Length: 387
Image 1 (cartoon, rainbow, N blue to C red):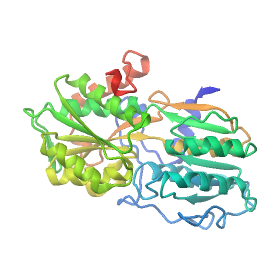
Image 2 (cartoon, helix red, strand yellow):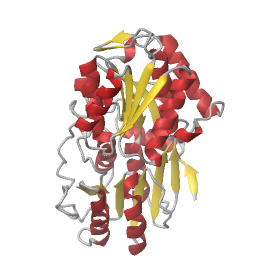
Image 3 (cartoon, rainbow, N blue to C red):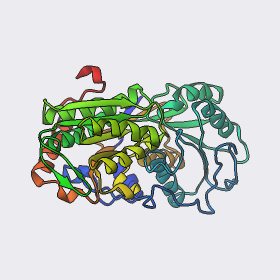
Image 4 (cartoon, rainbow, N blue to C red):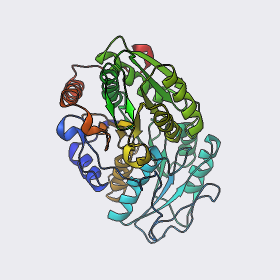
């Protein structure tokens, strides 16, 4: 069963997570108000929440009297990434504030640990976890087996589809949002543009993409980005590197520096905490970077002077809506929820410090492309091979 999330439900979830302005409300990138603590760290759990860090297992001190107990299994890279996992945590925190919900959190250190944490939550009886939330596509294989072993347990997964009757899958049109930031990069690399600590030179039209683990999911980011760049200027050279890890800032820095030193002046990352190194490299080289998942000009505010924009993905809304549906008895096991530009599940958000320096003409071009994608006038490829 497949369905698109309706606009009313999305806006409710998004506003609950502290959204100030969404790109979809204005037709182009905007500040989405996503916030961390400035350095990418997250707040400590309140006394209504329970945490189980990596190695401590499920259960913790979640309140058995809560209407719903949720087990959160994060992606490798853990909390404090200022990106994917932190966005998911925003969703469960908001759920805990608005509903009678308690939760535990687990931070696997490797892919091999996913099954262990999933199973621990599923077999727990004190507390009993009404929902186990699995964050990240790398959990799909483990969840396919775990969900079959625990048919009475409800699960949700972000970024992959698991064909099980007790799993709700949430997927995003990352390629659509990536097209918009790619177009922005393609336009600005073709100009002489300076802002904050970065600059581009019109006689050096080259940009880069740094991925974490090479996979069909991350290739959606790559494909959309490249298509957007080429839409802006077909002559732009695009460099691509996969570091092979979502939690390797030094690897991200090395990869991005190689690109900057080879003439790239803007690099987009889809690499989790590895992307922190991309921002470090941008500052070192006096160039620009584009963030992902959250508005990283805020969650990584130390690098706001080089972050042109971020491709925001509403992982928090996926988590929030799954919990809300479970609380209201409306959880649709076996469903797939698709979130793209039209549903405001992805968006291009200008950097908090540099966004005002980008001309209205450039923003208008991005806005027009956004609407064209929604209307079907622009088809965005999902794999680099389609380019």
